[in-house]
Image (cartoon, rainbow, N blue to C red; front, side):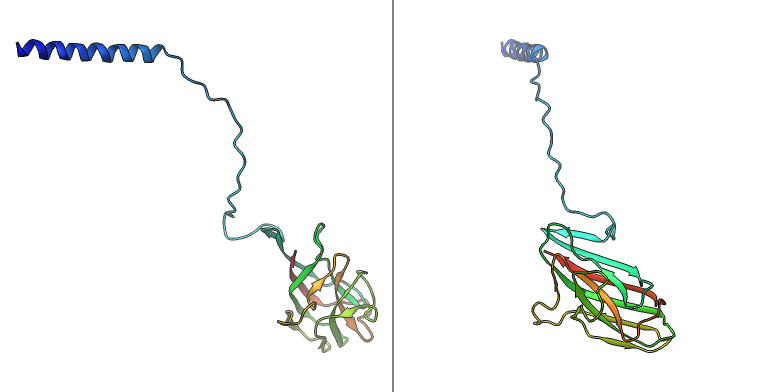
Amino acid sequence: MNKNYLIGGLGGVVIILLVIYIVGFFTPVAVIPNTPVPDVSVGAIPGNSVPGNLFSVGGLQSVSVRTGFLKATTTIGVITPKQRGFATSTVDEILLNITTGTSTASTIGIATSTSPYASSTAAAYFAAVKTIAANAKANFTWRPAIGWPGAAEIGPNDYILIQTEGPGLGGYTYGGYYSAKFTNY
């Protein structure tokens, strides 16, 4: 008698499973509408370098500029730190790397002006002036002094000028490059 209950119970379980399978097979599957997935940038940069000269994090732009000296008599370098939409830029560093000197000794200063080619008398020097001997090589870096407020701030219409004082270079220029790093905010 116990055998009959066991066989009847197993048969009942099999029938119930068969009914569940058939009902599930013929029940339509719910379709989820195709909703666009928002593009989320996680902030990772592949590799170990940043393409271009601009890096932006949380609304602050770090900009690096590097170029060769201009062939000129007084203004041998012009840097435009301004980026549209930013009120001011802060100069973090300016580097001059002179690899080939000129036959004329010169004094070099770093200034700001609203004109990219202002004369050194019209420009306001904000960095130390350095004298370069004739045919000399030089490498120097200027960074703003800590606690010197306003010294490194550049307005939205200002240029950073690298200029020679004195007789000028007579149309010849230095070999090498100048670079600047600054932050727009």
